[in-house]
Amino acid sequence: MALILTVISIFALLIGFETWWRKHRAHSEFSRKFIHIVVGSFVAFWPFYMSWNWIIILSIAFVIIIATSKYFHIFQSIHAVERPTWGEIFFAVAVGLLAFITHEPWIYAAALLHMSLADGLAAIVGVTWGKKNSYKVLGHPKSLAGSATFFVVSVILLTGYSHVTGQSLSIDAIVGLAIVTTAIENVGVRGLDNLFVPVIIGVVLSRI
Image 1 (cartoon, rainbow, N blue to C red):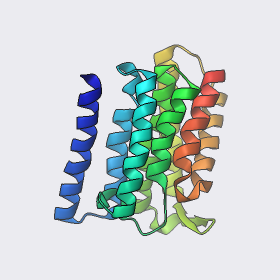
Image 2: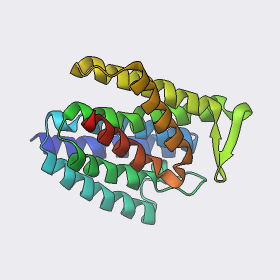
Image 3: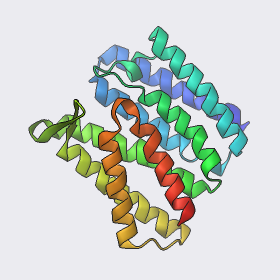
Image 4: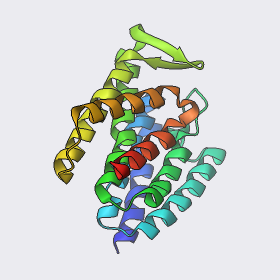
């Protein structure tokens, strides 16, 4: 029942956002990242009520669905972005790959929330306030405002993880890991950061 409700919820969110986007024609990047935040934050807590095997199966299913949607332009609200990106597919891959890296629900949640919250909020802040402090990495636009947002949210997530799990991460470890993930978010062009950031968080927290 939980699995069925999860699948229905994901599709309801996507259809709802798509309907809203087509009606209002909101800023494509803002719309895409808002969906990214909501859906990604929901997925981050799957391990608390769903088996790891089902998470892997759903990840594979969503890779196929998103690739099909991208090819046939079905969910335009998540694909209508000017720059070339495969971020949605890489994120779906990360959802399943993390289930192989860790079987600790809070590590899984912290890793995925880095992309749903840290990356999503960084993009929204960058689009809104980053025009005057923008720069390019490998030809792709970035901003100091967006990168600073990613770093701050990463520190908050890692601090929250340390508090909830009782695993005492030092300030140096938290700040160091936040710097590394912020750097990866900068160089992970074409959406590759959606794969590399959560994987690195998952691997590092599993070994601390």
